[in-house]
Length: 276
Image (cartoon, rainbow, N blue to C red):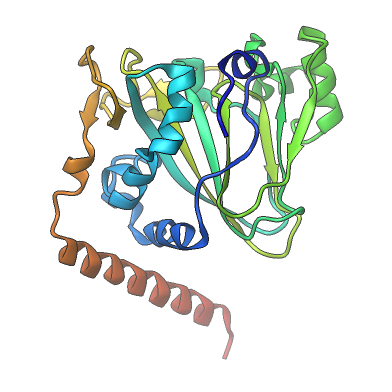
């Protein structure tokens, strides 16, 4: 599926598209066993995972991002998400995009069905506010109609679009688009987000997600160059070969150690719940 740049810039998002098969999804899910303390911050698993760096550099995926951002592109954020059964991530914008421009690609990996929808509000990326701020007006971020009514006060063309994606399907949206996810199923839903910008944007690490007073670490996060070149030198830019530097056998052994540790910890936590 090709991206229509004019339509994307108008409504703020693409139609869903298939990007991964079942085996690809399984490979990516294994990367969740890499301990988070091994990478710089919550959205930089790409600096340790060649699998995720390779996904973010996928030609079919990057060709879609190029339509919107142009030839020079960095991946600044990558994050595996486990949404527990019955949970939701209410209406929001990723607050980093209040400070720089870019796009997000959301990819479903496991346990996606009609009970795990993702919703977006068209034209909302042009609105000069965001859902988190609406609580000041007593707007409930979990109430679809209240959020939509508020968006329409800024642009009457706003509509809520709900997508029921399948494993391996993706959708791309402008960073400031209002969105939400909910899991009404009985299983945890697994996904990954990849967030892109151009190298002219200075990327920072949030200390605290506070829309009234965003604070940032005095440290540059690692950004993966996935297309073109970095002409600005204002970010810490790495390349895919930097991620691949370790010996493949060492990566295999290391990852399986992580998996075993994760499994043993899970078993231990379950045993602790029992009273003898």
